[in-house]
Image (cartoon, rainbow, N blue to C red; front, top):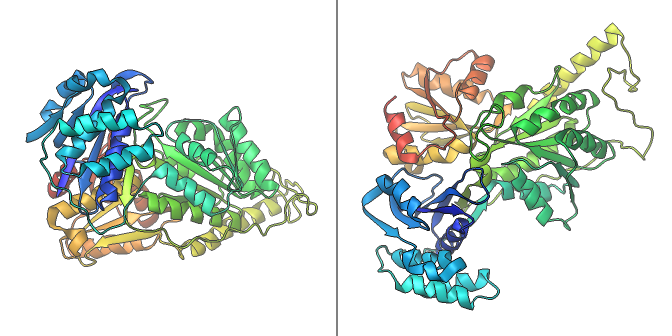
Length: 517
């Protein structure tokens, strides 16, 4: 069973609160939910909506057709009427207008009744969220009594947790005993800064300087002094940081960068999502120096890969870039999987205050004395590349790729980052490939973009040599992962499904595109 619910209205009407109440009720009953947030760059007004998908099985995407619309204004009904299924239900706002700020609470109650959930579960959730709950409870009861039940969501024996990517990155950082997070606000990276600021008191500090240039340079100073340091931004802010990243490449001061992509170039579509910053993550900065680029695909992986990023950066004195996007950062995923055991991140290097420690952006000899010697310049360029080899060997201890479905399936889909969960849903909708492991499709998720795993070439050649189809799925204009794979392996993926309108893939539409290849 799977249903799709749209909650829409003006910015400031409490759309997210409806999603929060209903998804928390559903997950408390053991159901999986996925909540996609769509909003323009406005504080008030406009048209905002969430699409909340619910299933009794694992889910990580939304579909294009709606079972229920919760409309907080007339515009929502008008804009989304063509997306409704024939037997779809609309929960209007007219009969709840006199409730004022509690209109959304009443609509939450109405939605819970349609889903066939016991009223007491709703009341308990309302009381847990509102300190002065009498008004809110009354509104929820009014909404509940206004509807008839249509579905029947009975309690399942399953422990499910809701999380978005920003929260997961923050948890991964805290698990790694992060000392300092430095950032200047920029959507969609700001969520991690807020999450970590809310967790201050657990041993770390959050600092906001005046610019992204100040972010990277102050972070280098803090890390030089021995602090486990992480910084964050989106594309435009990251561009300003790249000179500092080049200094990191020479100075070998550990640094982790959280890069949450949004559409570009320029300001682009600032509150929407694209996977269009892979190229700059791989190459941003002048000169040649070691770096690691990791792209998790769901919140649990965000926890794990943030921990790995801090571990690798500290162990090898390299920059590690954690690549995300708005869709992963802000969508709310549910999972019954727990994160892997935490890697211990130790500062074992000599730091300022413990002796004479030199670092600079200049070429240097073994004692870090600056030099312009041709012989030493070549020697230390070679040393930096050798260090990259050691980094790659260490990365192979982790999951650089994941293979889902039947290992011997005749067709292979390749993707990365936030496309992971919609690809899994689409392949299951085709023939249950992922669930039963017996279908015609398998999915190779690429988590480490640099270094790149040799398993990618092996899987592509295995399918191609057997006459199967290899399909690349990315949310960008030029197929940046496909180009990287061709650069590193010499293999060109001809079949490409690319979406670059700044909106995520719908599960049912991606299914049809895969079948059409």
